[in-house]
Image 1 (cartoon, rainbow, N blue to C red):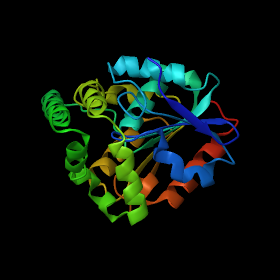
Image 2 (spheres, rainbow, N blue to C red):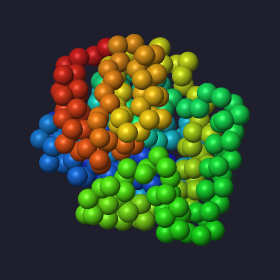
Image 3 (cartoon, helix red, strand yellow):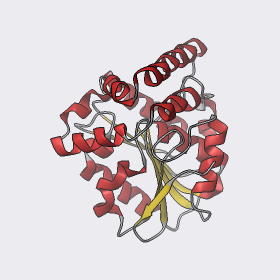
Length: 259
């Protein structure tokens, strides 16, 4: 499967993977900060934007291998994109120069909790297919994890909603069923073998993912941990200046380094 991919900027390649209901354009508001330093490669993940529906977790990783630069590149991911970025770095460590994981997780450890999440995602997929993308997005925006996004400035909030509504119900349903945390094999036990220089980033106001970030940073050898104050689950949107500074500082310090 061929993913839709856009790129902008000049410099060493940096791939950025968006979250659920997003698209490669999720990171467009960061162009002014990043395009003078990096050639940013921003795919639409399977089931999102102009990319085909998701078919499986392994297929998504293979699709990313085909879509992302052939030379070693910097890699960042947010939420769903962070889970995929982590799995990609574990599978292709020589391809990743440094790794940024924003509000991510290695998956759900507990079997019962994982099955409960799979069931919840199946219900959401059914809702999307029955009611359409507009109703689904309205439901998704009420998710407690995303509460702090309701504080975005009106222009940013409107752009976020427009981007979500450009997805298809069938595509989002496929992503829930094939890429959700309920179907992903957990990677917690794999973290100690990650040899890519890693920054684990989350918002202080997102208690759940801040705690997960701390645990991940403890298990990944040499990992750096950054919790951005006043930010919730989406620091790249809620605190874009601080997020861009952290990204530029981390990847800038990593230029020329290979672990």
